[in-house]
Length: 278
Length: 320
Image 1: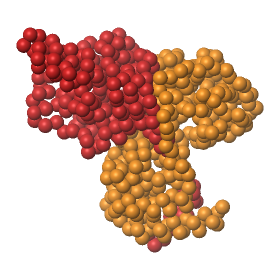
Image 2 (image 1 turned 90 degrees about the vertical axis):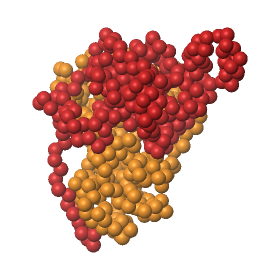
Image 3 (image 1 turned 135 degrees about the horizontal axis):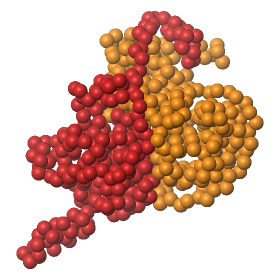
């Protein structure tokens, strides 16, 4: 299909406006993919709270693309490179998440959308993204199975419910052939293979691509990302349906009880009589 | 309005986490001055749920439901919610229940709060404690919605026996078609899964290579435990991804977690922090895991693990 279009492109480009054809290829032939990006504290961050434990303390915290989303973004890049696809990335967040979106563009996404609001809760975020999708059709929507900050694990499932589209979470493999889709889902104690059709939304995680497949943006990508569109749109009119009232940190742990490696009976005794787990 | 809980089963038998869900739901029902109803799929005998305070079981029986499908299951729970008028729905933290809960939430316009570890501290607004930041913190989260779905964290509440008569009723549902079909499934047979295990034996790079995992598997066999591994081990392909526990892998909330040759990176600790008792065996006394563990042995895994296994076999023989 692509070769055929390329041929038309070559023979007729003198007569027909080039950009017109190019746009046609992008919108009609290539798959349209939307990757939902959460802007989260890096996995090594120290977690602290301020304002009477009601807010997360962002001071000194490095923010990154949510790891589960980054696996999905990388999988989307493979689709773009091997099968042809356009990739939009979307985030519900305030201005502070723009560097994260720029990073997604530097990795290779074509266009970024930021819905300009704090991501109040999973329901709110899913409503915002669903509303955007209603107005901008996509073949494939990729989100992470959960964000590593609030761990709500609901955004892709809620979008699937609001829009009534196929949904697979804990997705560890995704193959697309025209509109046919083959996916692996992690299940407790193993995995299962599912068959379905586009449009589809997945909750991605490690396995969709490997850690070693993740991409660090290169200088060319970073330069290009500056030129790529980052649209900011105002939020749609929805409320959140939960509220986080207060945070707590776990109580400090008691010091470890060390047992001599020559006295393993003592360990078994402690586990049996003190911890009561044997 | 009753509390309704979806109880998972496998081959017609209620899963272990079902009794914890039943305990939680009936205690929650007491707080709300109502009763707790269980919804089951293809379970013929639900009487055991009565031991944990469930007064009624709605039993769905249909062979087409033997294969789990999230949207179909969300639809049948929706029908049960509509029939009973329940405003409070309790589900587990299994992968299947976490899969269906958001779809159910969209169906019935309920707030979904997952990783919940306690009964509500307040009923108006409905407020529960949950884990956040991958077990690095807790949050008190409230619902602004009339209906709420509580996703109970595994092993967070325990069992509360409260025997009452249970009324078992056949529940007829209409079953929706799905565009997704299961082609095949692979389960590691004869092995307990990390999600179902009371004890997890986990190992890291300190094992030096996949060929040494028989030590870990032998210890797990003795304990009836599941095996797990650290991220570098799954990244290097020594063990399957399904065994990787930690922030980007599987969360673990077991009674006993034994970490062998795992240094204890912050991402690993986050994933296993909900486990009740942590034991670390590591040759490096400076390994960060010692700060997170309850019991520790400084020693070489290749020396300690086989001896520990023998001792545990003796212990098991005496105590069974």
